[in-house]
Length: 237
Image 1 (tube, rainbow, N blue to C red):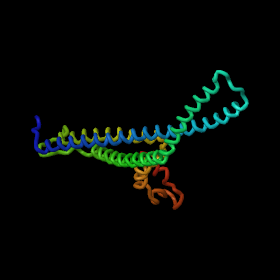
Image 2: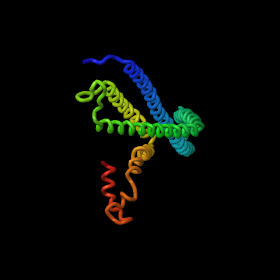
Image 3: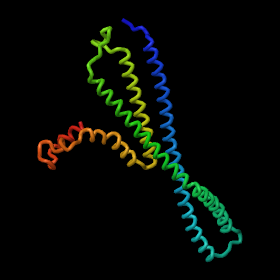
Image 4: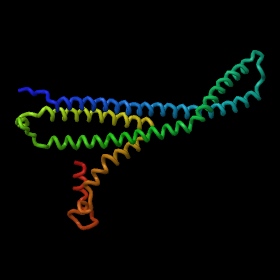
């Protein structure tokens, strides 16, 4: 009742190990992209905060200069000490702002490149996910195969079962990596880019395969779009 481990089974196990190693590498790459999105977001926030601090410092300095001109000097040097402290802190803020402003073009370039990589990777993952789902849909509706030993009438051949389990693991990894891409784009406020990628890769191919002028006008005259309801129902289901 058992199965002997053949050369083909051994080769399948080796291929499975290679696939798992490749999946780990892909997952590391997508995780790195999400971390790049976090880093980019932090730099953008620092740039915005620094600019706001400089603006507030400039306004406060102008106000304090006006007040100083209208006040008497203190014998204990209290206001002067506070002024020196504020001046020192302001110098640090201004120096930081100058440094970040020099990096501003590179930060913006980092944002653009990170979004481009995330969108590109998301599209690749969605294409593969569609392929995996189509294969699963086909296998679920295919009649059981029967080999020379008659396996397939009441059970599943081990090779078929391994393929099914490998496809299941791949689907889980794809969902995980898609999640990393979507979180990275959401962090950078690029949800619209994610929606556009999903529409291009997942929605438009289905619409193109279903939509035609004949189906659109089915049941009516040309231009009435009488078949639109049935066409939308077919696409949705």
